[in-house]
Amino acid sequence: MSDQSYDNIPRATSESSDELDSLPSTSASTTSVSPSEEEWQSDAEREWKESLQQLELLLTMVLVPYLGKYFGRKAAYWGWTKYMEWNYPVKIEITNPGLFKGIGAVEAAASL
Image 1 (tube, one colour):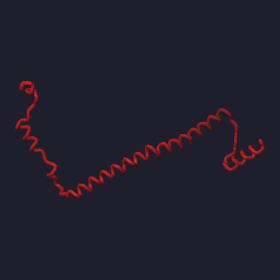
Image 2 (image 1 turned 120 degrees about the vertical axis):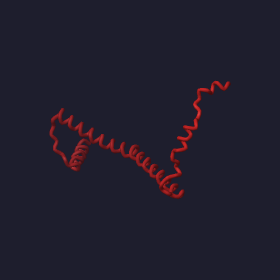
Image 3 (image 1 turned 180 degrees about the vertical axis):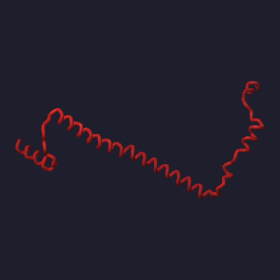
Image 4 (image 1 turned 135 degrees about the horizontal axis):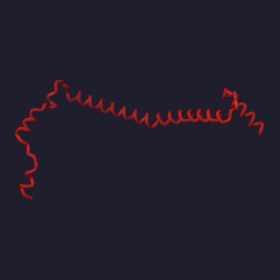
C-alpha cells in the first residue's frame, strides 16, 4: 500500500495531547484510602450486588409464581362461584367447612 491511503486518518496534534494531559488523573483523588480499604470496599460492593441478584432471582423464580398460583386460584374460585350463583340461583347456607365435609361423608356413605 502507498502512504497516500493513510492521508485521511486523523493524527494527534500537540493541541489535542495538551487537552488530554490537562485532564485530572484518578490517582489525584482528594480522599486518601489505602489499597486494602479500596479492595475491601470493592469486595463488599461486589458481594452486595450478588446478594441483590440472588434476592431478585428468589423473587422472580419462587415467590412470584407461587403467589400468582395462589391468588389465581382464589380469583378463579371467586369468579366461578359468582358465575354459578348468577346462572343457577340456588341458596346454600353451609359456611362451616367441617359441616360441609361431614355432609359429604354422610352422602358418600349413603350412596354405598
